Amino acid sequence: MDKKLVIIWCSAAVVAAVLSWWLLRPVRDDAAVSSASTVRVLLEQEGGGGLGMPQLSEEAGLVVVGDAQGRVWFWELGDGSGQPKKNDVTLGTAPIAAAPTLARDDLWLVGDEGGVMHCFMRSGQSRWQFKTGDQILGEALVYGNLVIFGSYDQSLYAVGLEDGQERWRQETGGYINGRPVLEAENGWLIIGNCEGKLVKFSAADGSELASLDLGSPIPETPVLDRGLCLALTHSGELVAVDIASFTVSWRVQSEGSFVSSPAIIGSAVVLTTSAGLVHVYWPESGKWQHDVTDGMAVTPVAGGSGAVAYGVTTDGQLLRFVVADEVTTTVLHDFQRDCDQGAVVGARHVVFAALDGTLIVVEVQ
Image 1 (tube, rainbow, N blue to C red):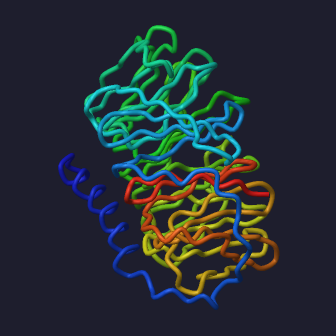
Image 2 (cartoon, rainbow, N blue to C red; image 1 turned 120 degrees about the vertical axis):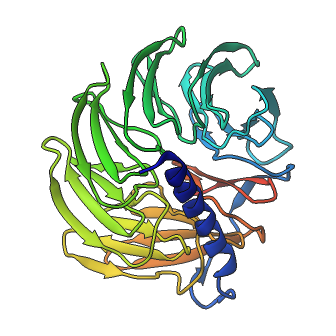
């Protein structure tokens, strides 16, 4: 596919998804889900807009997020009793949409829309920069002493963590929105791209090991689960691929179109459509439960611990999903803010950014 057409298509898909969430969201129906008492809000800090995808590091006690001015913000989680401590680092002028990655200790990585991967300290000290041919929208992966990431120049890169020098580069034949996922035991990387290709590489040297054409763009990161790689295409097909043989184990068609990743919740797979509807599929039985929020538009749902997941509606309600034989949905808190990106979920916290630049951190049980 022509490069300009693919860029236009991928951009249009994302814009269409945002417009679908915003324009097609229904009037709130408080009877659709049950309500819970107010959760513990640790942070609700208004900003200037344009926040990227947050990174939650519970071990380090931090939430880290880039913004549209080329800055990275560090927020200490705290206990909610006072104003959280924060500091920011300016990396450049290009917007940062990708989630930052903690490489080790206080060493961080993030790519920007100018195509630069930055390695830096929280103090602001730059360790190195690596320039690619186009924007970087996905999170970096650290594998040993390698930093591995995709770019819209249709390449997958590995550079040295210590020096930022290129170790290998592999053409992928399509634009990469998400991040590579790692099957650590064998050192295999798997990516999906806007050409609909699911590709397996060696993390050590970048050699291509196998590929599959799924027939529709793969707009976000695949997920790994018990020997399978699950990829969700824009056209709504959920495909399970055996990681070792790289053959299709099963595939099923869902309702709607998608620009998000599937979420593995217990024995089920949770899918969030471009219009914000949430569908749940149980692979073992083949059972579907469609639109579990009765029409409430939700940003991409993310898994928590066990059979619990979280999502945020486009008008700012934080939802908890408990997935068993059926799905139970509960409103935890109504922040009354417009949202268009999914939450980041840890063992004890849920983090998300609103469209007005407000960063919200909630403690969950």
